[in-house]
Length: 475
Figure 1 (cartoon, rainbow, N blue to C red):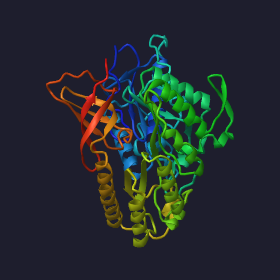
Figure 2 (tube, rainbow, N blue to C red):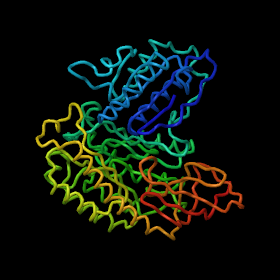
Figure 3 (cartoon, rainbow, N blue to C red):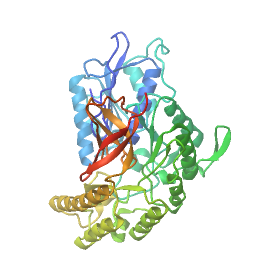
Figure 4 (tube, helix red, strand yellow):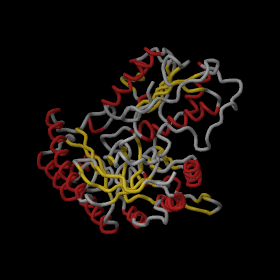
């Protein structure tokens, strides 16, 4: 059995003796869904359940689904079917579990043999169904759980979810209908989790939410305690606290899902300050622009205009010239004219974003964008996506070429006897490029996944860097 986010991940550790009730787990979707999966797995382990890496070795299987776009819906339905075929006892949770089709639960209609269906962030409900179909072990204290819980990512990086839900009502999105309005975690709770993750050996914390910039708005930036100090539950304060943790422990902190609000300017200077040991809030922002033309953004019901976005980009680069900017866009949105798409391409050329993803617009059941006039044919949407990505490939290639001859600090993700793959400060796991690392094969090097190393960059392509190991860390 495989555990996945947007792509398949490594299996959950294989099962111990059959006398212990054993659960299989499949996780699909975004990093926020992965965090939900980690919390459920943590609770299962805390109660004494074992985890299986195969369908055959599990007493039942939990599938955490994604339901954002049609392809994700189909992937989730296929995964449920695979689990039913391979095991037969399946509990479904996640965003797809909240979708309805003609007044009927979609999952229950397509797969009526599932044991139960819940919506997202429903750990208590999931556990209740597990207890019903697979009674709890008698001794829940036989297996100890790490303070930060069970993680499904590699040991050296972890996602830190700071809030749930979203207050925006973008016309192409149904996430608020599945996950609700913004609910921020107290800053003290977030920092305790971050500290526990660092104690477990995590070298990179990836901050995720639906809207990181809005952190604390729902609780009016309520004071909470961090290390005995009263601190506001607000994005700027959280970044400062995480920055201090990073500097003290030589780790990276990376910010995702940052909307381009004016107050984000206040965290940019923190990104330009490296800790004494190299730990820092990375000069990296994942900003979901989605489009650039004001009329398209208005139809999308996005919270920021295209003109303001380019101003933000200029301001951030002036404050921190080394900042890496990543974003996602939608091509072929209903009503998008050829002129409006050309405007988007002009924005891309002017903004010179480092990392970009683009999706051809896909109707999502329940989204208000489905009611807009001017739906474009599939081939037009796909052609615009391809044109967009070609422009971005040229930009990415040119920007990466600037790094030739530089020395980059790299966090290693995989190491073999003759080469390694890692990521620089400009690369988030799974969605950005990588750094291919080589060295003189006659030289023995003592490096492993999770190590920071220095790499001299010798070549680049459209998305990745290639270089030679400079200094291997002592072990």
